Image 1 (cartoon, rainbow, N blue to C red):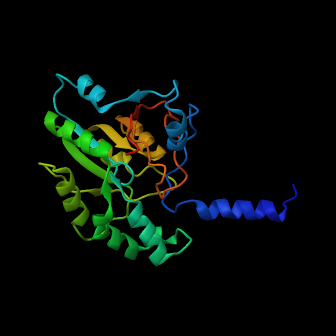
Image 2 (spheres, one colour; image 1 turned 90 degrees about the vertical axis):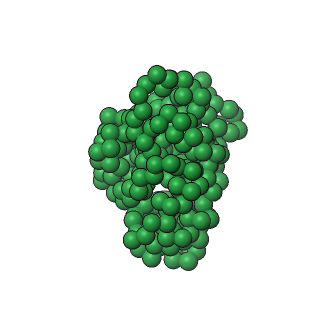
Image 3 (cartoon, rainbow, N blue to C red; image 1 turned 90 degrees about the horizontal axis):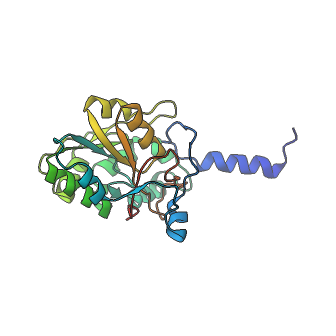
Length: 236
């Protein structure tokens, strides 16, 4: 096979554009649609959409249990943190995601620039009213500080706060699975493909939160690509 200069350039560009903390890739079972597509054309009929009210109704009469949420693009719109990190530590590239100095900035203070997502506020309120235990499990690299835990507790007014679990990331394994399983989490909410697979591998249901179209984390995932349920209006 002959490789042209343009082909090689395109291949290199694709490699550079891949975030350093990407999950392993599991082939989809359904077409799936990005938030951009769904915002422009509405929710396709082959995507299983669900609302917070629907989940609340399903859980009526059931004893409290543990639920989990991802942080970035699920609970918080944290693109300002990652945008700043890239500008400071690796302009135009993604090596900042392997730099502990960045993670220390993000986890120990910069999260004050992260905005709570409306969908997370609704979910957490509903689950707290039920008496469910709430865990935040993130693919971030951890730091020796407590800022993000405190910030999430204050932002979402969580009565019984568990420390944030920093699962880290890997291209060869789904790092969140062990924590979802260890805490007997029944529902895990996340925006990434890896969140859905991690939950299923742990015996939990993974429910998709739509990643905002203007998120700095590209490419935007295909909602419903694994036949998972997708939260309505969860891009906000």
